[in-house]
Amino acid sequence: MAYRVGVIGGGQLARMMVPPAVHLGIEISVLAETEGSSARLAATRVGDYHDVDVVLDFARGVDVVTFDHEHVPQPVLAALVEAGVEVHPGPAALAVAQDKIVMRERLTALGLPIPDWAAVHDAAGLEAFLADHGGRAVVKTARGGYDGKGVRVVSGAHDADDWFAALADGGSGGALLVEELVEFRRELSQLVARRPSGQIVPWPVVETVQRDGVCAEVFAPAPSSAGRVADVADDIARTVAERLGVTGVLAVELFETTDERLLINELAMRPHNTGHWTIDGSVTSQFEQHLRAVLDLPLGDTGCHRPHSVMVNVLGGPTTGTMADRLPALMLDQPAVKVHDYGKEPRPGRKVGHVTVIGDDLDESVFRARAAVEFFTE
Ligand code: ADP
Image (cartoon, rainbow, N blue to C red; front, side, top):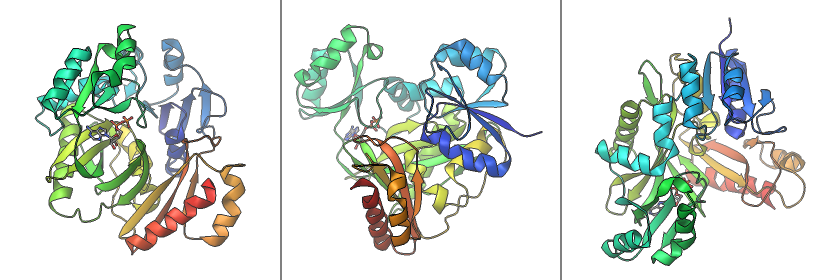
């Protein structure tokens, strides 16, 4: 009988799990938020993931439940486990990814390297942190932030007045996270996959370029990372995966500081934008590996097809029409570029697709990938 995987959330991550599921003969179904979701190519059911009955009913037809995002409430996850459903990653691991303050507490307890941080409840707490950290810091909402929304550089407590007011209204989990403003040379991301039975397989560490808090470009492997940087990043991600009991793909976003340290910024317990290059650049993509991992099947080889893979996001999309309209011209001009269209309506800043170029020369690959994206964003 075929393996059956159910994915909660109908975004592009669920969509990109479909091709490897088809190849491996895995039946994939998706619980999407809306009709016409990015994952509509899969067997999709529309329903509210906050509703226990909806989620339990969805889970009845599958062997394992996994996720396109980390927002499923803990009581819903608990009900799934209670009903005997395999859930990967499990509720305890997901709890750490759902709340940035809980995450800092756990990473601190594990002795892993992270920026200086504090949970602050009011302006006085934030002023005290600023006074100890040179007058500037980064404030983050504990829950619900993504793509840099919920992240703000502040130089006085008044810069976070609106967020403190929202806390007083009972929002954001009772406290704000404040962190030192890290001086970093670049941002990195280390992905690994882990099976419930323990096997862990990493991909090479990559460099990520963020613009306005959104991932814009990824270079794989990260230039000049062979040796210490790769080893430390791999070690950090394995420790996180093992100690937090993560199953499926784990992404660890890192800062490489100007004084040669690697600090953890964020964890994501699902396939991640910084791993999209693996579809075209790695023997096993992050989407295939995630399916293998959550089904507790042996993990695939993560070797690279070519020395360099460059992924560039299509942010916003074309000023008129859709990506599909621009496809023929791009295909004619750049037959070696791999295009990924998420089937989403263009909207300023929205991730509507990405392109990947693999090659022997980094500069050449970067040039071609950027040129390709211009076809979709002009
Ligand atoms: P999100 O969860 O919304 O993606 P992140 O916490 O990853 O937000 O932050 C988004 C971006 O903001 C990071 O990729 C980085 O460029 C910048 N940033 C976040 N925290 C810090 C920090 N402590 N110091 C310096 N820059 C930071």
